[in-house]
Length: 212
Image (tube, rainbow, N blue to C red; front, side, top):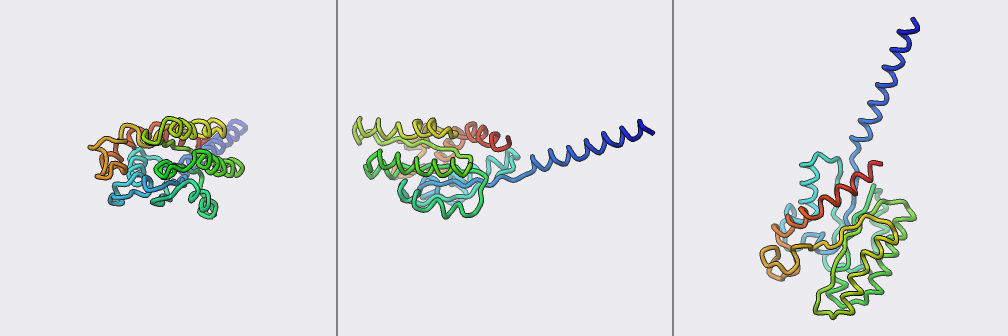
């Protein structure tokens, strides 16, 4: 009788543990991607944009995660700072941020860009929202001093606020004619494919952190 009771008890425990594990792994994480036209998918069909191509890669990898595209063409770090809180009134499990390209193109002071992104990260940290920051780099024609100051924003902030970090959104794509639209600023479909290829290993590490 005692042995039967122990067997039944162990089976019951195993059954409920299995349910808990399956529930944890079956949860669909909701992640919002903030950014400018590079995130919005300027000049591309919706299915060819960064968020959609990344979602396709996620689905193919059988990852239970749903991306929301919150890219706004022309947006600066100031614009994102002004709107991100009301967007987050809908609950998300995590945030990805790619902002600053327009700040650099407009020659906005790196101090302003730094403070804007910092204020966003402070809020996300305070509210315990996991974050991945994607870096940007300034065009070299803005001068060495500006470029160095701007480019340092992202690694410095990611380290200060301990967020996941991908150094440069346009790695291997910037200024490459075969990967860009005619304006040589926005990636074409193949450029986005290259961006996804580069960023996905970093994204996977970010995703795994959400499961802990």
